[in-house]
Image 1 (cartoon, rainbow, N blue to C red):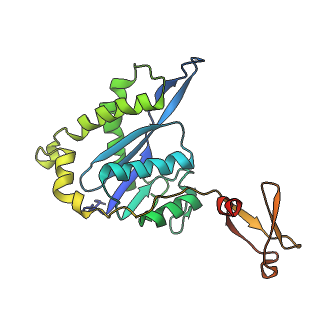
Image 2 (cartoon, one colour):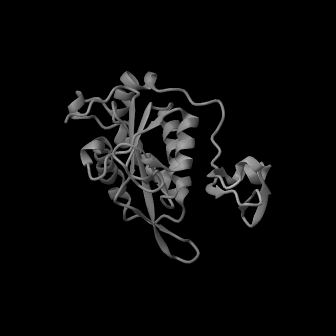
Image 3 (spheres, one colour):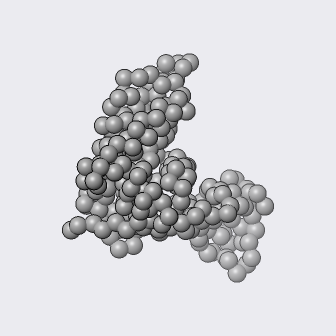
Amino acid sequence: MRQVYKAGEKSLVDYTGMTLPLTDPVTGITVAAQIFVMALGASNLTYAEAQYGQDIKSWLCGHERAFQYFGGVPELVIPDNLKSGVKLPCRYEPELNRSYLEFSEHYDFAIIPTRVRKPQDKVKVEEAEQNVERRILAPLRDRTFYSLAEMNTAIKEKLEEANLRPMKTYGGLSRWELFRQIEKGALKPFPSTSFELGSWKIARVSIDYHIEIARHYYSVPCECNRSRGWLNIDSVLQN
């Protein structure tokens, strides 16, 4: 089935299979930095950055910086079924990570995860990953990086080169040129306020009308007795 990509409609996101070594300047211990990639469907404009891991904070910050790089927000974001984004994969009603869902509501985009074991659903981002691995990660794999900031500076330089390369299938236009022609004006603007990541848990009201958070107990209305639901821990602790 041929995928159709309208300007400003879809962006696809994933982590590359290839990583970059990050060396601790004190201990000399090397860890694998994860490479976050997001690509716009219509123009193929690609964003990439190195992260310490694939946790929810890194996942959402990668989205935020990608939107800033593009200068706007697409209507849909299509992730793979990694745990930071999708808690329970399902073809019809996947269970999304609560913080990811809250993030999407703040930035006003919809999340449509790919189907499990259906690589045709994410062809664009797989092509972007291959391009990032070939044009960015491969030339940098023998360099020694002592900080994530240093690594991302090097990635940014190579990323600009990759996005400025002519694409034969688009008449020699680069990703940046195609983006400015068809997609820049179609993206939605940023919200007026910045997103604040909260910590969520499923809480149950006990028989004495209290809930427990971090070994502290908070009273709730008696009508909530024995009820169960999602609770934003940070908002409770701040109040």
